[in-house]
Length: 436
Image (cartoon, rainbow, N blue to C red; front, side):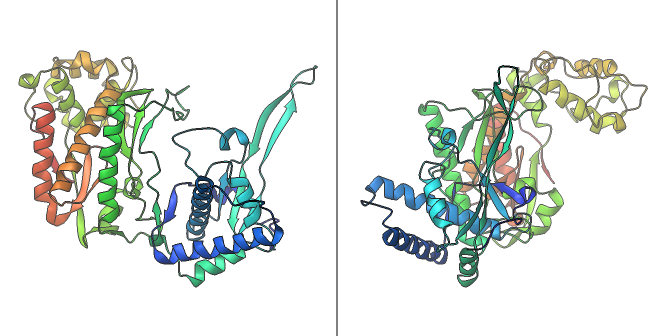
């Protein structure tokens, strides 16, 4: 067995993905070979007194598949060399719609077997928790720790090479939850936790929508030449916020979302065609006019143009940031948001900007300041999902980016028409759709 000392680097480890699965015959063959060797190990050491129940065998095989697939994945990632994961009973024995089969009580024993000297499929550095005495009564408190770290072992690395495994052999398992509810943030810089919920017809309909879209994207001809991007990562999820399915609901999870606009157009191809980005102009403000049922009071022209009220047209980028801050804040902001001042002369105060915005948009200003931002995200996301479904019915592959989509250049005309029609169906307003 290869000694793992000094080869683990926590900065090169990423979180274990329990939802990876094999999508090719050669990766499935690799997994079968490892499973056969593990069964031989169990038989030789007589570590099992009886065969697993059918349901336990399914769990065992799914856990093995997830471990091997993610170890293969991390071996192919230049920016990572290992995985970190929890092995505490608190996590592994808990029930959650989000954690997946592989993060269960079968995991520790399977890792122990895979890391045995005769197996050497995985190298393990056990995690630890640190406690310290906090008072004179010798009470202790948890002050930190480190999760267990896994690296592909020599036997697995040799099989990755022998079977010529690539990122194209990996996929996301259908068991992954695609409708996610997050609790409110504890403070501004915290990460909201996932929250369990009871299914109802609404959540089931949302899940069915996303699964249809994901099946379509999984089968689509989508390539990306960027070496640090995995084009098989295209399983989308809807994430709702503040323990409320009426808030948020944007789509996340696609490889293209973290890329810059320039990188997308340079590297991504759909049906072997270059892509274009089409986005809704001034979407948040249009949604507010629809919410206020004030479509007839919608000003013509640029909704961010405040020149009539003494704010130069050159300030537009800063004005847009200010308006978004107003919409997404629970109270009127007292200072300019980050990045706005460089577009707005110092002689113009926040109060003057707010006055100009109210004069430009009197019909929606009360709504702008009512903290509706997350509800607008829900409407925005519903419209984008409607666009994706309508395009799918037309045979058009589209990759969503909040208020925009990427499509093949050949499909831009159809996409622009459907985006306008879908938006009007939801709001009664015909929007501008811009070519990015």
